[in-house]
Length: 173
Image (cartoon, rainbow, N blue to C red; front, side, top):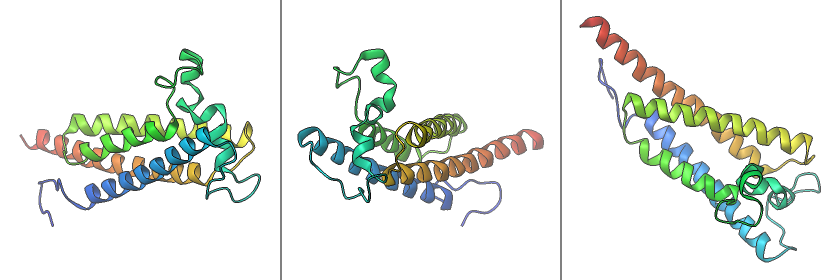
């Protein structure tokens, strides 16, 4: 337990952040697995396909299953390296976030907060596409959205704590 003005680099919020990163990483690995299976077998049915309108397969097969539907506008559909599956992007994101969670530097918290805000906006974009364009509900997507909301709240709490510490140090000096 930390007391006084010292921060806890391995405290409860860091543990929660790492746990959320691991959850996001596992979901992203499953997402990538399903996408790879779909690329090799058109008839593959994912475990998360619960009904016709609750289907991860339909979402992963769509144009939005790679590069969030945005990279193909720039590089085209034919370039697999510059238009990666969303799951592989998630794997990189959660791994980097997990690794940076071991450090509590203000600039790093600001970078994490910026990443959390951008990915939260991306979740809103993808959620809107899910409901308004694809008319589908993807269990994996909803779980990722939930993880991102919790990540944002956790990172914002870390940032706020670091910002107040920096402000209090300046005020007492």
